[in-house]
Length: 133
Image (spheres, rainbow, N blue to C red):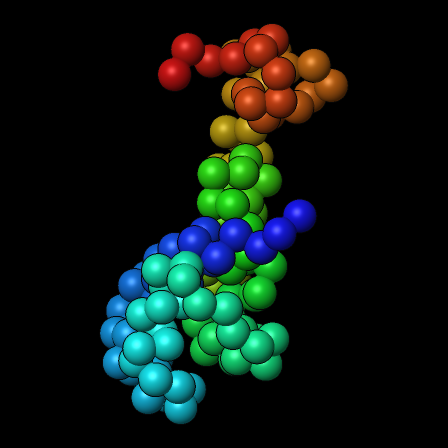
């Protein structure tokens, strides 16, 4: 399957903006031209694997993430997990225990309400027990 440079460019741009980094900052810090950054984000230019790796590292992500289709449910799931992980990093043990108990209670209630097969709590797994939202 050929690489989708437009999608890669959109992912680079999205991640750069999430980190509040300008194209100029990215170019300066990685010693590449502003023109190259612009072309990458528009998906009209490919780069070497070394440069691609440097961009991913600079943006605190992986090459796989930059190549992934953001509309893929697996990618969305992994992104949600990453966001949750970031939120949890600064919590102390007391707050983590409280949150852990809340999550256990919530999970149990969701299972009871929607009666998912095999105790699953993923309403997207199939149409059975799918909540009306």
